[in-house]
Length: 259
Image (cartoon, rainbow, N blue to C red; front, side, top):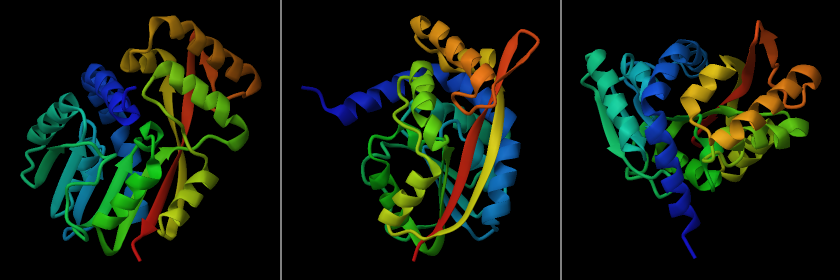
């Protein structure tokens, strides 16, 4: 019998190695909007030391590095880190460190090391999100901020949302609802200071070209989104513009503080 965590990590690395270059392009298109919202909640400053957990192609890491003293990005996929280093070079930043590591294990950093610990669009890939949140809290300084940004489908539509995302990306595990995130923070002993919500609009064809789903699932994805345009079955505000389907992910920002 295989190790479920090891098997899942291999799936993540396989998926995001394929996605690295198009993912970097897509991230660059949306990072301004996302960082503006994060910035309004967190207000990072020049003395902050930041950890970006599951940093991907580094778009968020680099935005923090433009403001903060020191930023570290950690991700399990070497191809994503290579794209992140390229982005750092383009931005001529020397206050960024990149680590390759599995965030489902204890983070390789000392307790109370970072004033801001953030992760974006990673929790729906995790088999045990509570353990990761607890580790994020451990490495955060007392009074520091722990931030999670992730899709939060409506409770009555979460099953259909997760079905769609698993067709699109087999490394998707489960998107949590807002209430489930609130319970997660409570269980980790992290009081939530602020909570925000925004939608990220994307075209289906663009998303398919970025995601590399199994070809056998492409028609299933289209069918689910067509149904969503008619009956709002997934809660993605799906609609037609000409012949193309556009939809928007329902994303939440949770800002906790280490007690």
